[in-house]
Length: 191
Image 1 (cartoon, rainbow, N blue to C red):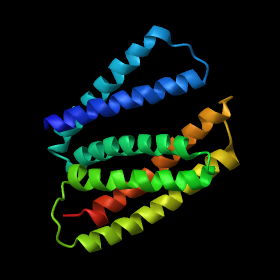
Image 2 (cartoon, rainbow, N blue to C red):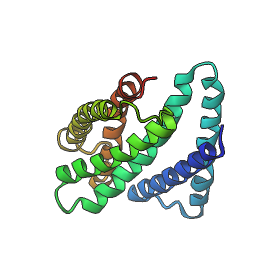
Image 3 (tube, rainbow, N blue to C red):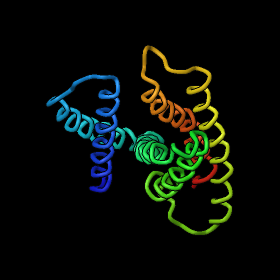
């Protein structure tokens, strides 16, 4: 495992801690000085999980790739969420499309160069075309899931609406992530 792998795992753990803190506060929890625990535990857990995936990945490469894909996805999802929050004044669905497209650019670069380690430039146009096709299907899955969670299902278990919208962005990204991993691994970035 490289230093950049460890640093990225720690960074992703820290930003997840921040989002978790925001969600807890959104639910009305007063976490006070326990917030430091989130900022310690999440990065450590992230690093330990990546380390385990690295060792399992020596036998099963897809486990290592899936762990790195997950971290790239976490980072891109945070980009997606924060851009959505920044642009929500436009329109929730349009904001979601814009935030998805920008976060997917982050996913492309991270998955190409870090997750699947495919830096070569031969066949780049075919790769970009395949990436666009997989991503467009992923966009449909992501936006459709977001619409389902926010408009059809609605807030659950007494969740405040503003928190539910944020959770819906994350749920939609997770649903689309399964499709995207399979598409990227076996179609776009196959070796």
